[in-house]
Length: 320
Length: 147
Image (cartoon, rainbow over all chains, first blue to last red; front, side, top):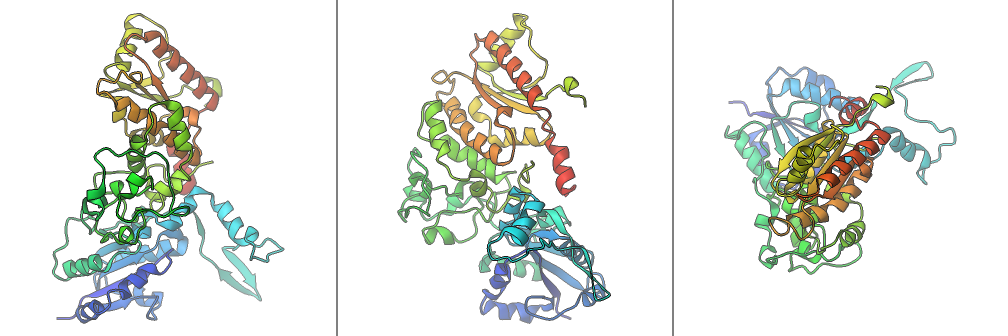
């Protein structure tokens, strides 16, 4: 029997998800033994026409990483959706919008101006911005459109499964590939990771006090947390309570509070407001004035609570 | 919509022990207040997850009122303190989203304060008329597409 074929594609991403595939180490040999890679722009040379020539269903699974920001990415993922029976959103950006999604905190115009006009390393006296069409020496050149906002993959095409993480961890990737090969995939729409909160599996779980009280907000930029005590109890905003487990608690073990890259469990619609609910109720205050004073010391709630998930949050972007 | 005909839609989460009873008192006492509030009775102001408030704003509310027992009077002893602690953080978050903080108001209304309830709804309606419609759903769709 011919080996099943899989495709990897990247959109607005940093390359870390591609790195995660390579991070499978020896296990990748088992993967390439079991499947043929039909498309992988970062590592192998394929053209769009090769993909257009695929028979429907010929390539079983497309792993797509990165968020969606340009019309070219939309075209590509629509093409892959049309060709592949299974599409997996790979990594936080495809799953939730990711770090590039923080760009929804500002407008397209400001993002372009920042990049092409105001950045200190840019020399652009004519204030040129990328154009959809440009004529040079009689040739018509085209560029993809920079879309008004950043989108997660399932806001553009239907997605069958999600592999969470920035980037997804090797264990979860191997398990997902195994499930595909054995035809043991769970219900469509599932996130291929445990459905419990990170606090449940946290190595610092036992250090969590009975009654938690946040007296002041701390940041890892200014101080170093005690590695053996619950970060939240120390006043560091650790996204654990509102984040899905399955990462192997890598950040926690590296003395870094959880930043929420796995997104919330299936119980929560919006990880940011859920986390706000959790930390809000832990403040050690009994008056409105004290609550306001303490709240005022939390730096950048939006960027902290929605670091990986702004495009898929309830409000999705700043307006006005 | 011409400005003078704009009627704000306010979603009100009222705790059943104090504020809902206070609202009831305003009604049975035949106090006049604007009909702009859509009431949702909850067990406690501490049960009002910020997700509900954000969802209400995203789905078409122009403002949200959370009303509970006065601090110290909570039926569950400290649920209203949770509401009190979350509120300033939520306002900070809404500000970052570009939403005027006057659109979300937290008030303590006891079962005997029908008059205060009517006054709060009146003040809030007037303020939201000044601010105009939030229209988040439509503006959001126009800005970034149906996606």
